[in-house]
Length: 175
Length: 175
DNA sequence: GCTGGACCTTCCACTAGTGACATGTCATAG
DNA sequence: CTATGACATGTCACTAGTGGAAGGTCCAGC
Image (cartoon, each protein chain N blue to C red):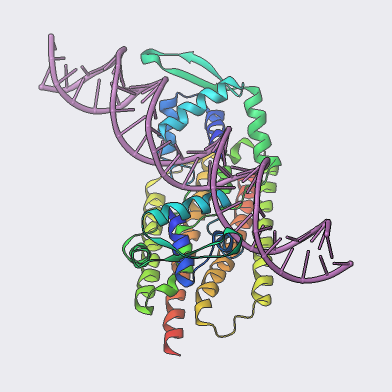
């Protein structure tokens, strides 16, 4: 149910239309919490009905600008401070590792080295991103830096692990 | 759609009933790919209908023992070797970091240190597990060791990152 | 003037996943 | 003999997420 909170968080910065929100989901949030149009517009309706959002203004082209209400802010704050994030589950990549014994050592090694490459590729993309963005001294962007750093560390860890794991399989093979 | 592959992978080791599979999902796979009963039994039916599984035997209490077919093995192999795992997305924990600016520095720091503690706790649990399990020299358990090591590295990385991030916020605060 | 692209919303059919309930069988300990 | 707990399956109502179709408005440039 975090979609609602993502939307509340976005709208807590400034009011926006569904269209605006979609763009934010596609850019900054896409890697952490993707959402489709149908979901966003649907949730916008639900959140308004339950009083966490309100239609602050109507613009051209039927544009409706949504703003967070006091109740919405309270809910956001509650989510951020009183509830523990559920541990991330479901990793397709890791699931495959469980079944590597159904492959030959050669195939298994190929998979793991492929994983290492994918992780390295993602890391490269993040480094590009880091160079391109001029953070300036916008205090709001601290969060962006934190998440970017997380991505950097995470991809590095995955690459190292995958290379190590590939080595392990080779070693077992040799026994 | 990885549930089907998880089930194929499990059944590639040895035939099992839905009940057996559930136990495996609850124990070894719970952290990587959780599944509910309704999902497992439903998928069992679908996989049988599409010829990837077959009912190998019927036992007492209406027990049906499912076995993987040749087509099933082929599908499993294809999944493991020809398709890239979709990058893991959706981290509730990371989503919150995006919105830390809606909290006071004190609250934000508390959140990050809480994350560090949660990661450390998970790491502790994994270390316990590692000690308790006697891997013996079962070559099948290599995969188990690999995933466990992943968990160890992942939780360590998360703890370090969270502590670092908490420090960053403190530092920004001091400016 | 008209066309293409950005803007903007709504709706629908679908799959995946959750949680709970209903139902029944078999083995064994007391 | 009976109660309990492990074994075993099936079904239903629900929420979350995916993917795409459809329809309409405003603006800028040719």
